Figure (cartoon, helix red, strand yellow):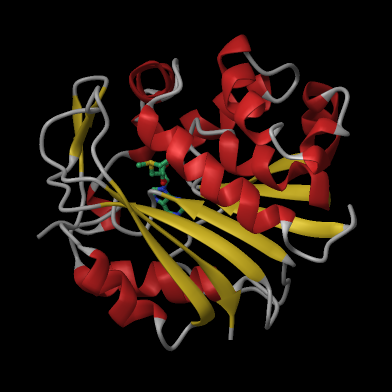
Length: 242
Ligand SMILES: C[S@@+](CC[C@H](N)C(=O)[O-])C[C@H]1O[C@@H](n2cnc3c(N)ncnc32)[C@H](O)[C@@H]1O
């Protein structure tokens, strides 16, 4: 068993991770975007919420999905390499994200944003953060955490801690969405191994029932182009913090 601190997150190869996962829009992400877009679009928010995405890595689509509803979005990331990548990307994000935005723009509230690049530049801020560390006073109105709790450790207690700390970042009643790799055996980024805890939907349910209300669970099948060997789909949960 290896905990989060056993890995060199600052050496995370951001470009390799992006290239492998987000250079093109895969079926799984399209499925997740559809559910996320419809969940957020039904919320009674104007554009004044403070959003947070934890462990952003090189994935901009959770922040893009929160964009119409937020006056600011904090991107909390532990890895220095990913923070540097984000700082550069957010100045003028790359064309690969346009196909992700197009899925979101199937809903009117997204289409009203004429220049999503400019809005991302103005409304996002990257911060150094350890989700396993203590909970701050600060609370956000809306949050996402994608492929983090199960993909930063092989230790069950750290998975539990990450979920609890994520929910504790949000105000009571705040909506959130999280995704997980199912039964993942870990992953390679730039030739380095990174950990995962092999969890299934039952594990997520067990952890979340006392943290959230109105929970909805979605299983996402492995698409026509699996990202790699060693996982059996993805899990999406959304709901409201207790
Ligand atoms: C599998 S990647 C997921 C990245 C991205 N959210 C996505 O959807 O692809 C895990 C991310 O968690 C970050 N991470 C690792 N340990 C962390 C910690 N203790 N606190 C916050 N983030 C952490 C990594 O740097 C990496 O960006």
